[in-house]
Image (cartoon, rainbow, N blue to C red; front, side):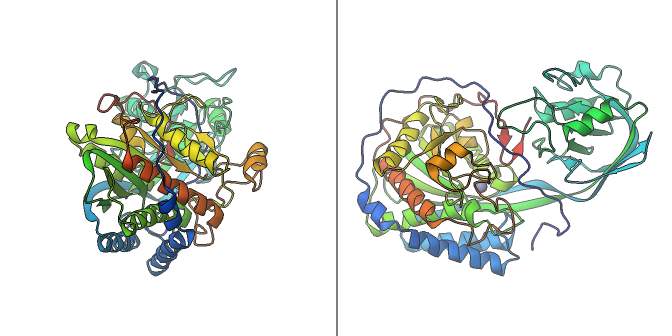
Length: 511
Ligand SMILES: [Zn+2]
């Protein structure tokens, strides 16, 4: 059964852009990873092989309502496909089941009932936050400590003191900024608000849209009242309207999703230096998810099959991971890390993450492990991983560019646990700059992936040259760390929890 109803509202591509913030400074070791000869494996990992798996995933989507989302038959069939091939190749495969709640929104409305009568448009003027509750509220609006001028710096709703004298039963009008949406919403709920609107901040942050409508998340659990986002201009207008009364109506269905992560372990290799090579196998509900993330999972699968075919017995155990629930907020990978014992966390050498590696208007992004380019570094050892990728691209005469750890993919749980991480990304809804087009080709002013989280993310939405290069890079890094992790060996494992002030959880903004 497809647990997502057809008239459900889900916008995936609203939350955009990278942000450079948070502080996580630990010195990176000067060591580099020893050079491992990976030519034989790279020759064995072909783009034809990767495309065969993508064809299979497309056929699975075709047969299952055009998607492969977590909790649907399309995801189960995708998992079965991967597991069958990995079993046959001699891997120890296993699955890990988990259950979570997701809110799917039905018909939703926002209207001004006083002083004027205005109907607002879902997806243009407002959007439900993930983990909002439902409700039909008509109430006066109370403005909470906003700043509509100058630099728009604000702590609106971040402190309980912002709600002193708040009339219980009102709708709280709050401005984005400083603290997480969850903090603002929970303070409003504690003050007796019947509904919450968080409007964009209206400040200027390069590369970030602080004016338009955005997609936010409150993180679990589901809240008892409706919480929506709104664009800055509308929020500013409401904040200066006397006698404002709004009707906010959200219909929400809490859906229980039960799904599984899939793992394939090499039968040999040091288990105290486990290398986790992962990507998410679930798609969004809106499409077959061939670039996001059939591409990463197909390239990982092809690497695993080629290693087995060549009879490679790695020094370190490699655990190939096919996460589920990523599109609902990195659920599967976070669950996996949460179930590790302190010993198992120490025995996890590193995490490689591959999420979208065949974008049609690609940039060869490498996660900025040492933070030297963008200021947010991963745990100690992540810089070595970045170097392995950067050196690889250099060795084959291809350019690459750093991208920051912002919380948008499955490295999140590993980094939270202090485990070094790295990986590749060829771009989602972000817009290619003229500088990037000059270096990487493609079209400036257009998204890296024009079909991000859309129905057109099908078998025609991958660039085979990009996929070929990325598959080689994946094979190279996997084998490099399978044969040696001494240079990586993070020293922050189990100690780093909560030190990064994440901007995103999956594809939704946290603040
Ligand atoms: Zn993805």
